[in-house]
Length: 421
Image (cartoon, rainbow, N blue to C red; front, side, top):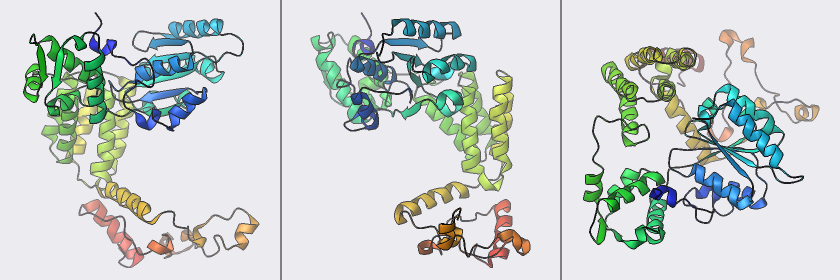
C-alpha cells in the first residue's frame, strides 16, 4: 500500500491545504487559474509545502495534458522527447500542455536552454518547482519568461486541518480511533512540512496496536528520537546548525564558525546554500565596518561555481574565518529597516522640486531641477542642500557605529555637513 503522504494527495484545488496567498479567493494565481489561461511560472518554497501537488491540481482543473520530469534523473534528451510528445499530441487551438519539472534548480544550463524555445512559443506551459532561490539557480532567459510564486511553510491551522482530514478520510486511518490529545510537539516536528506531518501520523499509528491511538507530546518525542550527530538537510537540525554558524560569525568566533561549517560539509549540505548565507552575513553583520567582507563573500560564491567540490570547502573556510575575524557593524541593515519604517509611516512624500528630473520643457517650466546644485562644481565635490522630502528633512536614518571605518566616514561627513552626523 502507498504511504499515507501519497494516499492523501489532494485531487483538486478545493482539497488543497495552505498557500491561501496564492490560491485563496481572489488571489493572484487563483484568478489566473479560474480564467483558464496560465503563463509559465516557478514555484519556490521549502520541501513538503505542496509544490508538486499544486501543479497537478492546476493541470486537473484546467484539463490540460500533464508531463513531468525530475531534474535529478532527466537529461537534455528527455526534455526534447517530452517537448516533441507535447507537440504531436496537441490538437489545433487546444491549450498548451503543462510540463512540470521538479527540482528545476538541479537542471544544468544546457538543460534549461533546451526548454527556452518551447516555453517562448507556447508549445508547453512550464511549471517548475524549486527549494532554491530561482535568481541563483535558473538561467536569466528562462527566468524572464516565468513568474515566480513563493510558497510558505504551512501554518499551524493548515497542519491541523490536514491532520483532521486524513484521520477522518484516509482509507486506513479511519479504521482506527485516533485522537490528537496534544499538538505542540506534533506541529513543531512537522516544521511547516505536510509530508513530515503525515509521516509522523503514520509512524505513530503503525507503532501503536491499541484500539485508540492517542497523539501526545511525549509519544511524538519518543517516536521521533533522533541521533544528535545526524544531519538532516531538510530538517530542523539544518536550520539549527546554519543558525549556529551565522551567530558564531556575528559573535567574532572563528573556531565556532569553522566547526559549524565542518558539520555542514560533513553532513552533505549544499555548498551554494552556505555561500549565500556568507554573502548575507557579510552585508548584515560586517557591513561598513569592513566593506571588503562583501567582496570576499561574493568572490567565494563565484569561485564555488568555477572549481566545484571538494576544493570549494577551502574557499568556504577562508571566507568564514575572515568574516568571523572582521570588525562588525549592522548600521546599513538597521538603516534600511529604519528607512522602510519611515516610508511606511509617512507614505509617498513628494520629491523636492530641485531633485526632480526635467526631461521636457514643461517640466523645466514647472521648476523641476531648477535649484539643484551640482556637487562636483564645488570645493570638496560637496555643497549643502536638502535631499530628503520637506516633511522629514531633519530625520537621521543612518547612525554611525563605533568601528574605526565608520568613525572615519563620520569624521568626513561631519566636516562636510558641519556636525550633522
